[in-house]
Image 1 (tube, helix red, strand yellow):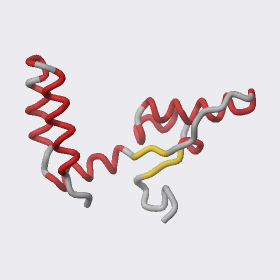
Image 2: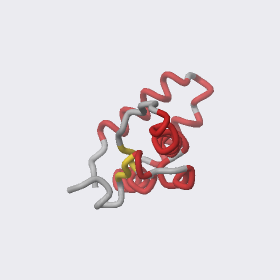
Image 3: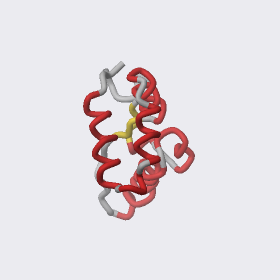
Length: 96
């Protein structure tokens, strides 16, 4: 299945600043860089972004929203521990 066909993957080269809500600021910026710097001979690596819709679909499918929030509330106790716990939730999650 080509990227984008399922609506959860977008190629960087197809992104612009107008896509921040869909793929986040960093991914949209990569799209902008490819579009504006390519003609100047500056190479920007290609790739793809996972959409925010895909993120929320995974979170809701695995019912991990409350656990993520709880770890974020404990962020003040240690960012490393909170990050490790949240990454673990995603690694163990089932794809819908």
